[in-house]
Length: 490
Figure 1 (tube, one colour):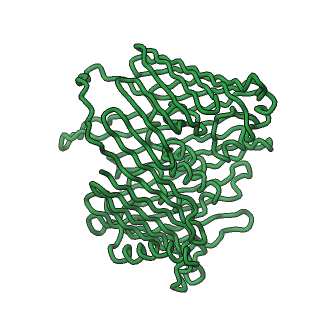
Figure 2 (cartoon, helix red, strand yellow):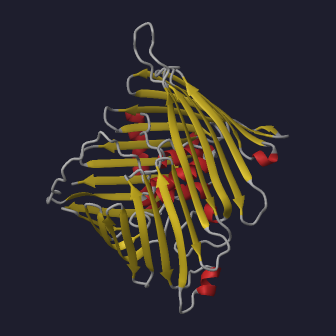
Figure 3 (cartoon, helix red, strand yellow):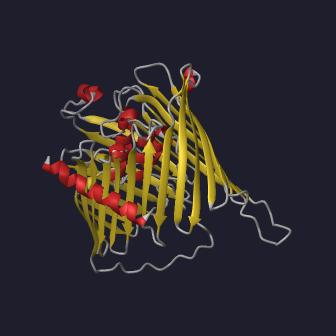
């Protein structure tokens, strides 16, 4: 009981702070905890799907979390993956290398999640210290890194980022090295369980890279069926290939004894159509921007030993999404998006297809949005979500919003509407406060919830807190779920 009260106190504080300060627009992040809570509160994603995304955000894997959001919530990831190589501009001047600072600097970051009974469900602490060409991380990850003119060396907890893998990996304890040789590079890994990895890659002017890799290791109590068969004195063998360009990433990984490799495909791109010059005032129009993105995971019952996929992806032989978007800044900044999510489970011959079409338009002070979501095209869209919303900015830095979502179930008809009212206020920096009143059953007197968001962003301190409460109709707020993060820079 005492622990629950302690956790409730910061959440109640945010209620008071939010009501006192007003509200603000959420930070422009592709995916963050506040957006996940929004989809969860709306019934757009399930608790399992929300947990998968939150786990990735807690680990700092923004890109993979964005991929899950595409399929589960039909939210487009507008930014291409950070690892995607981009062509080097021929006019770009190469700056002379500067000597890294010898003064230690870094940050301390703490993240925590609160469950439905007010307990601290999970937390993660990280200390990062940078000095000269070294980076030291302590806490949830213990790692010492060294980088110098393309060379890389790591010692400690090594995983996806350190091994530059397009497919998420388990965390290994050991050492990893990468050394460039002109356009080529060689890399390797050795961990305490005698797992080894060797990579050989080639890069052409940073516009495209291709890399081949080989894994060798031994099984343990957590191995899968194929690992048990082949985890003899010769060990487990797997090999693969990954490539990336300015518009695609493709990775294939096959383990000896498996019938089918694990494949990950990402295709993305954008194009701007210049509409010319306005003849009246001579101002050149911004033009219409089209963008698209395709993501897919393909595998069978078994996956390579060191791959670490989200639960839903691991249980699906095909898991993918397709998104298209169009933005016309000169036409009341109109945005139109179309998303499709496809999942084919391993234990069934069917494919679940979810479709969404949405758009928003209007001047900056009055934005109108609408969307329609077919929750399962395979059942002829028996469940369809209709949603409409409006955001008004009567004053600078203050946004008021309202939305209604109705689920149509055939032949039952329409379920009670899901209503939301929000108020948001932000300052000139990234700091903001926001609160959202939620009536999931359409009748506030029966069930009224409150979601609060609070972010302080400064030079040395970032603090954020997101809480969802129920029982507001009785004026007895009870935290349903929450997230907190504190980051101190030095």
